[in-house]
Length: 402
Image (cartoon, rainbow, N blue to C red):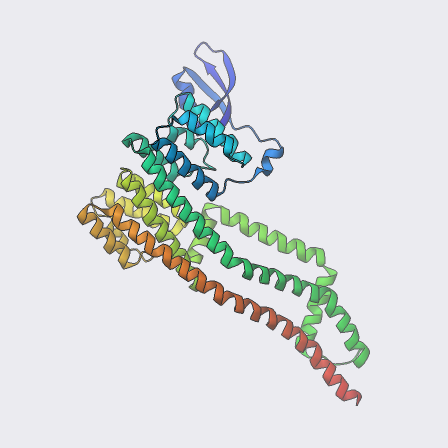
């Protein structure tokens, strides 16, 4: 990231400038080494320009980049030349600019891991730490190949989840739109018909009166209703993005009957795959646990891994705290124990990851087949209730007329 700063030199003169750093603290430390005391360090606001609409780097693109970089490193191609080639063939504008900046940093003598760390929106902590481990151990090509496999697996899993949720999401949107359309445009017309048939003093069923009352309120306060719904959704999303809100939301997911199974299996698969890759790269257990916790995607399980890291630091084996976790099945702790005994924990956990990724795929396939009829039943029930509320009084009034 780029920061602007104002600092005072030892002779009392004030200096201003800008510099690249991963954080404000790093830049302050750099300035102190240069004999300058920082007065203010700020990250300049981004101007509204076309770069805002460039989008994100997709996992598929990142996986392809990683695999190609691994192939070129394995073939002995210099990094600077490899990045030039990758830069020229990349179609994503944001990724192209990122690769160009990395190429300049590497050419300037910065390590590959540090160059990747400057772009946290593209390269995660897991990615950066594994690259650093590969550089230190002289096995960068092998580590990049592992990362490519892991990214391709994540991309495939996300694609399956999105595919499974597309149809239910469409049905949900149609249901909500149909409800608002019927209540705002159809019910008022039907209410007028009922009044014309039975007169102003006609007694309507309670549920019909309730629907007409809701319809009148929504028509009179349509902007209030839509604005209130938008405000509530916005506030909920913002709260979920806070540390406390995110933790509570993740805890709720782990208590929801259907979602609990999917979220837990995805978290375990990510834990096993990421932790095994870091261990194979030579990263220490404590560092691997810290990085893996942030890559799981669930704050509750991340907290459990942090507690497990404390136990490991105090001399316990990792399999012990995992066996006491309410979210890690017994097979995970048992397989981890076997890996610790044989010294092949990375190999064992890869098998655990393969097993749970297959479980996730099977669960998602089953979930999609269950959700579709449920959403159709909900839509049909909503329309049915409205139909009964209208047709019942009409039939009753028709009998009275006869």
